Image (tube, rainbow, N blue to C red):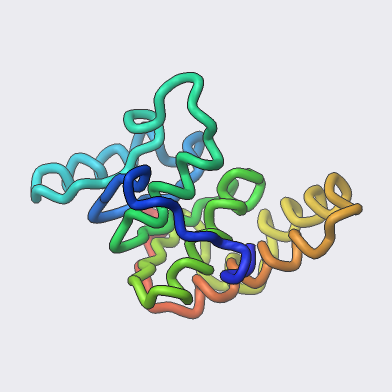
Length: 164
């Protein structure tokens, strides 16, 4: 989503978080990100966690937007299946636009995936985008925004956590 499309939410609805972590749950929730959230909590860092913050019945898209706008730092955990999730791609696009608009910090982590695969959108990322392009063939502009968000986020210095 382009930064011009993000509208500032009323501050009465925006929850404040120190960190917003974007990740593909099936890849990392029960391992790496679970440990990351534990370490953040131990240090007193208030982190947005979708499975503990969003209540059943809430509108996921609007709750995520509020959480993104209320966060100071963004950690994006890129994993093999990150790009296959439309939610992850929408989330990343909103994060990148918000970071560009506000100057907040985005920290990429490459978990068991080569950073060049993410940046160049090759391997599993190429497969995911081929599926997205087929599924959303009537909205290729959205796919282009997703690709740009991936590239922009990968242009930042991050951590390569392959085989660790």
